[in-house]
Every structure is written in C-alpha cells, then in structure tokens.
Length: 126
Image (cartoon, rainbow, N blue to C red; front, side, top):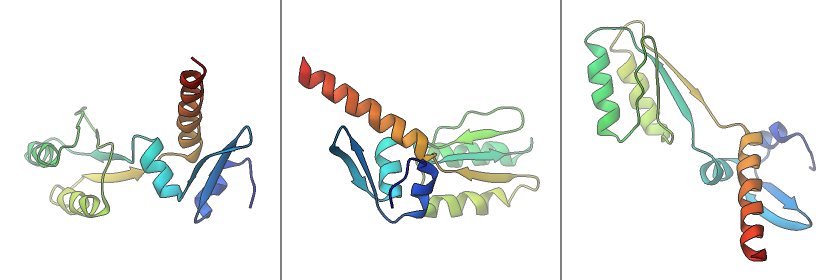
C-alpha cells in the first residue's frame, strides 16, 4: 500500500519512508515510534490523599518523570506493557484514579524522522 495519509500506517505491519528517492526508514510502526518519538504518554488522574505520594514514589522508583498538577500527573516518556499493567493495578488502589495512555501519532514520528534526515544531509554537505 502506498499512502500520504500517515494515520493509515498504523494498520500496516511494516512501514517504509522514502525521501528524494532514498529509503530513509524501514521498520514496524512500533519500532518507528521507539526510534523517532518520545514514547507513549501516560496520564494519571490522582485524587488528593494518601495514594498520591505512594504513586509518585512508585514512578520515581521506575525512573519515570512525574509532573504533579492539582488533578493530573502526566508521566513517562517510555513505558513497557508490563509497567502499564502495574500502574493500572496501582491506580485501582485509590478510588477516583484513572489511567489514560496515548501513543505518538505517526505524523509526529514522520516529522522527527524528516528533521533528522535534513540534519544529516546538512552535515554531509558541510
């Protein structure tokens, strides 16, 4: 399949990007996200109370960045499926806590890739 609609790449097993007739990326959508994005965004809505410090300590223990705000904490640039399961289980310990996960959009992955391709081309020309 050939497309200019990058959201369609999520339905593919393998994605190749070509720039000026050159193959610049050739991998699965998950691998492209791993290489050319900050990773999945995990947002927890944590009610005030005793659970908040415990969850913040849990994130710190796993090397995840946590930016507390009054009603939500966006956490983690990179997370594995097992860690997501643990976070969801932990979030159930505190009623009113919710976990939402967003994957990077393929359009943003493509933009990062093309910036790198352009930067590499500029280095070669210099």
